[in-house]
Amino acid sequence: MNRFRQPALIFLWLDVAASFVVAAFTLLDGPITTYSVITTIGIIFGGVVLAWWATIFGRVSRGLGVPATDGTLRSLALSYPWLTAYNLSRWGMFLLGVLAGAAPEANPVALTALITIWGAAVLTSNAVNSHLVRLASGPDEAVQTNAARLCDWLNLYAAVGAGLAVMNLVPIKGLDVTPTPPLMQVVYTAASVIDILAMLLSLLAIRQAVSGPLPSGKSSGSQGS
Image (cartoon, rainbow, N blue to C red):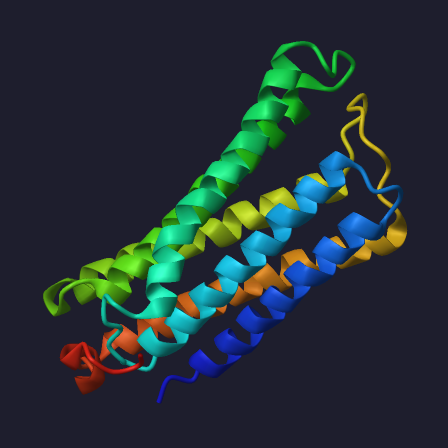
């Protein structure tokens, strides 16, 4: 019995719910602008992708095969690159703004740390999505390898997520951003903690799922649709 699977699923679905809560707060906090609408759409899109991720994780962690034609798997495989592109575009626009002198009074060390951690978060999120797709749809003989790689990326994702959470909570002096209200800080902090715990529990569940003999459902490749 995989003792980490159920806690992981609980936190994953809490993470999905937290994404929509953050989206609502982002849109409703202050005047609605083009930037807030675009940001909200991106957060909602991320929540939907996470819901597909959680669904596939639930099947894989039970040892159930996920056929390549499965609708949820195909939705995840097709959508996560677009989410990565969206997040990279936001990161790139921020980087270009900084290079263009948009924040001349900001601490350069803090800015460098923010840009580095933010970029790493985008890339690790992409890797977590892609490696779950590989684990779910890959051949049986590659299960151990794909699971190990997914666990490595989940571990890195959690570490980077913790760093990004700290950067979001500690304002950078000289960076032209609106101060975050206390309630928003609580919401963002809670969402970050839930996200980190969800990924760490998923890591433990995947490790335990593949530590023993390969479940018969995974080898069939025809269950869980």
